[in-house]
Image 1 (spheres, rainbow, N blue to C red):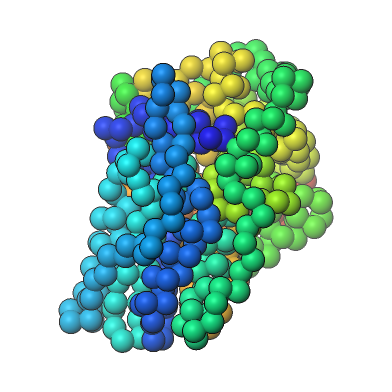
Image 2: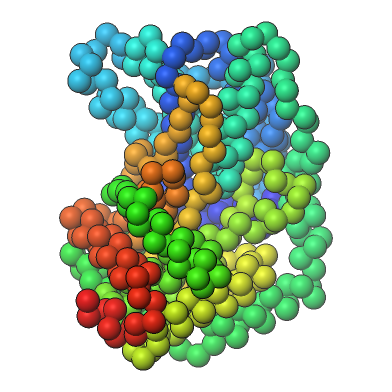
Length: 436
């Protein structure tokens, strides 16, 4: 097992009786005729190619281990035909079926750790809903590698051709072994020292405005509010990226931190993000698997600093985190003394990430991932953004025990306005921006 998998496995044990907060979903849309046999053959081939997708986990003397199972002769697909329903009801019923699948817990011991539902909405309208446990995927797996492999294989098999894909050079288990060898005591200690320095002193706890009082325990319940910022906003953000020599994620992160400063009035802020730990290795670029590590990002805000100053601090914070993101989160907690509370996650409970840009799947194909709810959420508020040709789409996953949907919508509207103001005048002070 990789360190990321160990982290997820341990946390999943605590959430057995909780909503499925580690379930990830994607929908592949097909506009046109669909060869079901070719689709099933394609899914079966993907599971054969990638050992991570036919892995289960067991415990021996209290320690987790993984078992790689033989490739199935035919990967199962549950099929639903909604074409006989009134047109006005088909999309609604398809979403219900997808959400039903996403809300079902996975059994890490018995597997399989992914499920597929094929929904026919008409002769030329089809949806493939795939739900996976996060212990076998990351954003690159879900949004890029899997859809691209699926379409390439489907098009070949539908025409009677063999797979056009080269065999993976390594498997996820090879990466897990390499990672533990690479992360020897010297590297581990150096990276832990970095995090100890970043998280020294009294650690802040964000007191954020909620619609309801915080419960005495973490419920891991989750709901989703989705939205979109038009292309003009994306253009503004890219302009400041060029001016300040920062990435789009850094601009969004700086706005996110400023947003929380505005809401909480705190000057010492820790938010989380999901670092793609290990993905920079060339050998794993095309590998399905979990290459995620939650990392804390600490910011110190003063009223006199400008958004330009905050961007400079953001660049330093992100660069340092990326250079030291091999250390698993639980090791950081052990070093700095952060302990899970009954009612909040350790170190941070608000998270932001920028999903990989979705690839062009070709004529007749598309994908979405922000519309299906699993009913669970690891954090009390998680903002996931994705840039598309028509703008920036986002999904805010929130705990409904704390927030109303209307509150979350208002908060994301406030974030957009704050980003627009900061991008237009980055030399304005934090105090001035938060008053606007």
